[in-house]
Length: 166
Image 1 (cartoon, rainbow, N blue to C red):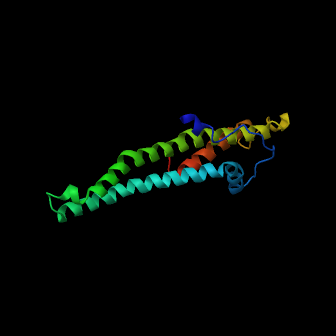
Image 2: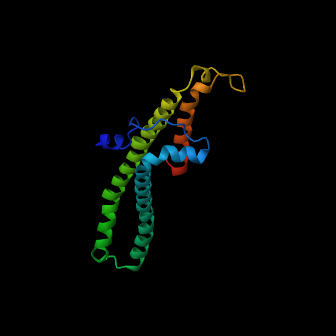
Image 3: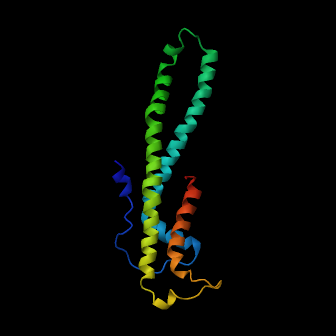
């Protein structure tokens, strides 16, 4: 079941090896464009889960109003349809949407997007000369070879922060 989520993003697929854009927006577009449908589905499933969660609170308020205005002896008979629908939302729809949303975020986006950014950045870095790896940074350290990993972690953490997932 979880394999389906894990295979939605193909980080090692063939692509043209080119330099990622230097500006932030271009960098994000460059790496998110191949997975735009996964992002849209993730946002849609997360939105549906949030709406189902909010519907519970709305229903609890309506339930209190129905109980205070209705007859105690015929309450279940009068409101059976609404109670059954909300029971299905609570016991079926909400757990399914929760598992789907967590699956897209934790099994598809987190590992897949990280690997995609890392692999494509390393493929570009492999084309560089040895001198570009031994250059000393302005602060005196030799950090240039770590930049692909940093970019990957930054892209993932920014997406996680923007989407509200953990």
